[in-house]
Length: 548
Image (tube, one colour):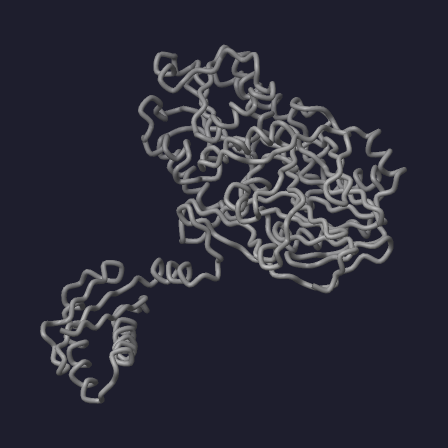
């Protein structure tokens, strides 16, 4: 590494070049702090429920021990990888606020991990983590207790925003403390590491209060049949809005989806979503008239195993989607999920239901800052340097250009693995370290470059074939080759042709005195070429020779 122990550096390992999988490192005086350790959901054919996480081999291979992990809030793209990577990094201390700690503990419990070291953070209180002075500052987002992190060092001050927006009436939590931000401006913020997710939107993201007004109007018009609302489970303000509006119209609410039940328990632990007596179980909902029923469920992104998909496929014992029900998609479409969501909506329409989404009604507001909100934050904090994070490269580039147009002196465009040397007036990228992605398959993680995952990709697109050849010590076939290829073909004639081809090739090649390893390679080439010519596939091919 080109930087020294006394250097202050910033290294993104995830979230700079993609949306999700946020993970950021800070180093100073041999102290290492990580902010967030999240996941992103894959869209390949490997698995319908795959999780992709930052590759942290840079830390492991350099024997780096974290002084602490700070979590800005409880969204999956900021905390989802923690249970899987916790022990790989020698069980580091986790710093976060109470609600995020409750959500995280339940995640650890679900994976059978009981001993974790969490220290709760209080707003506007400073603590020392290694050689960093850390303070958390409350912002507004689409989940309780979203925090910006102020990192103070002897060299300079950093303002790490996490996810945020400007919501003047957030309904859950308090509005942004402008006085505190102005005090930071007076103190001096040298570098702001800032959310870029919504940078292409010009106008303010909107308030949760706007959604509440819109849902109130929709509920008022819909007095027949039940209402089904699908949203992000973690959006506590949205859950509160649906519960409150339902109560106003004498409707009972049912939660569907494990993640909603888990987040509800965490919310109650921290005095959110209290004082609602209109929540009933799935079984109890059977005795409630359809006109008085509201279903709140997961599955807004078209996930195959989520509650809404199970409903539309008639896989719920107590609740059924009926003609003229209203389904409200109270969420945004995450890039990459458009096809799955469209397929789900088509299934719903075949059941003759009505659908409302954010394209035709203001039933969702973003939790991220638009350009006007970014400009307001620049004015409040007045940083010398902006480092855009949380977005694809096009988001980061747009954010950097916009910050320049707004008068920010310096902008640094980073990607995962870039090492940024932070100095008063001359911060710059000085090198690149290893970064990458790992995928969760079952309960194990694999680097995406792993041969096992590459083979899975081949099998999913080309299939695989197994051929067993039994020879005696004189190189004579004792029986016809055994061919097993259920993912390639079940055509009897083609299978017979492959057996005959292998038999012929064995007779031709054994006279050349090939060792078995070379003979297998020659047969593999012949078989793959024949299958490619016959049916257009190049399957993963295994050939085994058994000598008797």
